[in-house]
Length: 217
Image 1 (cartoon, rainbow, N blue to C red):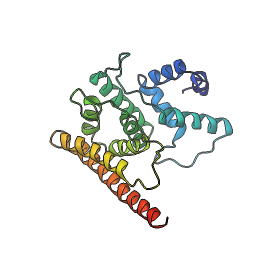
Image 2 (cartoon, rainbow, N blue to C red):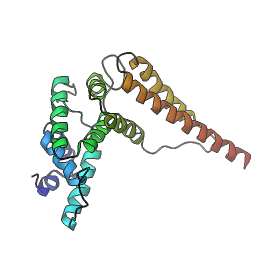
Image 3 (cartoon, rainbow, N blue to C red):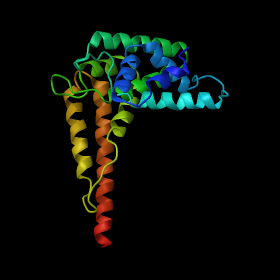
Image 4 (cartoon, helix red, strand yellow):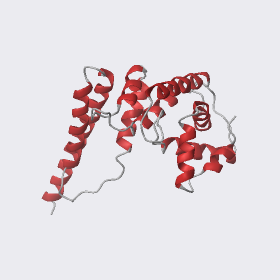
């Protein structure tokens, strides 16, 4: 079992430590799954008692997993070896299934794929991520991509009367890539369309909020 000291040893104190940590995380599926086990109980398991040390380790593990931007199969030059990525995902899912944690494994992988670069064709996500997302047959992985794409936007700022232009731009971005992928990656394209619709709705909300501000001046 992964020692709690491993998390503390890498920590978040410096750029080198962080890079080393994520390189280990994305090349060692057994460590990836061990972190999942620190954070999440088995899907069908009973509630578990944890002490303060275990709570601290679980919190650190959660932050590590949810701060990961490095893609499986990524080389030092940033290129992604699709075969290596597929091998990592396959083994991580196998180990997670053995631990009754396949759902959270897939969701977390999807969140990581939300940070994938564009492909050589300019379409997002890139070839490796889009292939794994489509071919896994996992709705949880696609759901993780949706959540990760929303979350990676972070905090935003806008003028008091600006409305939803930012959201419409994002909706257009996701819709463009969905259309490009709908014939070759239909499940992924459908999820990207859902992202576009979400930002459409958000844009309308911001328009209404801006209008109310204008009328209340």
